[in-house]
Image (tube, rainbow, N blue to C red; front, side, top):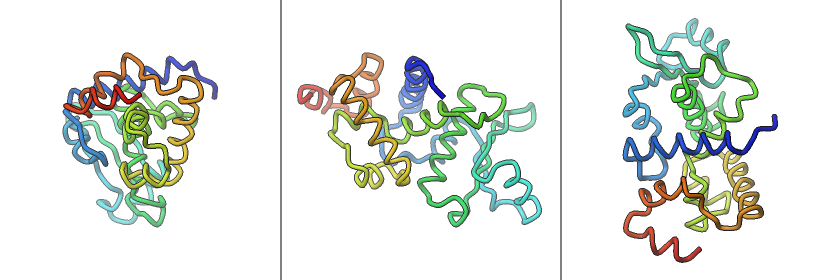
Length: 193
């Protein structure tokens, strides 16, 4: 699906706001802590007995978001069986995909939901941080940011495309994120670009 680049910029801005609002500064991102800070209940499928677990898998083999009600908080249910979902990195990606639905108050998951995928990717490994730090190797991205090989490949592709189109330019809306993550080293890294 083709989307206007501004839609992706809006997702990035939402991620940046969460980093700043919840003081997130370390990698790999602890998705459990992020959900806890955002008051999202995070429940693995393994919490349930087999018949219920099979019903959850019919809803989604990976994860899904349940909107809050008067008596229940916003909830993300996720498949924590690595044999079924592939890797811990994939579980983390699925959870952050669902966080996007919470943040944007989506009513249902869209099978073409590339914005939620982009949100999760940007959240787990923010592209401007990678550009400034010079991290563009898939193996480094997997080990530093705790993402799976497929996501690392997409991130590397995003970095290449961004550098091809914009060089090492950092957009104005990304500067607060870099100041937040780099702290006292912000000027050092920015002067190297």
